[in-house]
Length: 334
Image (cartoon, rainbow, N blue to C red; front, top):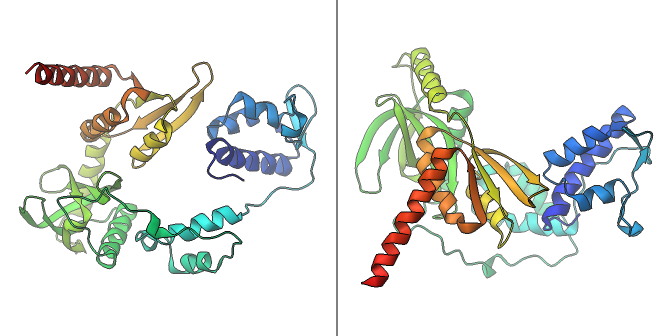
């Protein structure tokens, strides 16, 4: 498995699922195969030829499926396949352990298991990478202080618990003993910061907070009508959901696709490959209060991305680009 080759890493997951479904059901339909390839965003003609053993270079073919009729296939092997880990993946996992964020998302037992993995490959020296995207306004909080905050917020999101907290804005304004329900956590690649979207019980709207600026976080002890607040929250959240997703067409040049997935990692999305255009389509599902931020991120991707829907987002981006061009043109003339 070549994990750093985009086509092959996703293709392996699709192939694994195809084989295991065919083994379990003793057969698999052509439609199911195409659906799985599409699901894993690897419905490329070249990969389909390899899977169905139609590549003219026979050594490129994967001879695991046997055609029964025009619609059904069976396996040439009499077993499913289990996930496996390669030396390259072990090397990468161990490198990830050098991140200050590893302990935020992995249990101690998982970290110990990864540390015990053995590989014949030389490990990556973490010191060769020097991050330059740290915030110029905020210094990064120690991970031992940040970790319990994030874990408490995650639990609150999963269990819909109310939080009481004190928040200090970037400009020094303090909101003491505010009450809110966290909706989602976001990570910004731009400044290496974690944010939380909170529903404010007092203001009845959403706010975006830097997690490290939250202090004295605790669960609500019962001073509020929790059921009423949750009902208001659910209703507000429902109304805030955008009626349709933003649809992007991404031309995968200059790592545009990878950048798009990184930039929109915090948003619910789906993706597929458009054969006829040789482009990827990404649908981004969002709340109305996130619209300005999404537009800003789309503009960051530049000419390799085109917004196809909805129309009001297209018009907004076109207007922003026109204004930028006029501004730069005027400055050049001066």
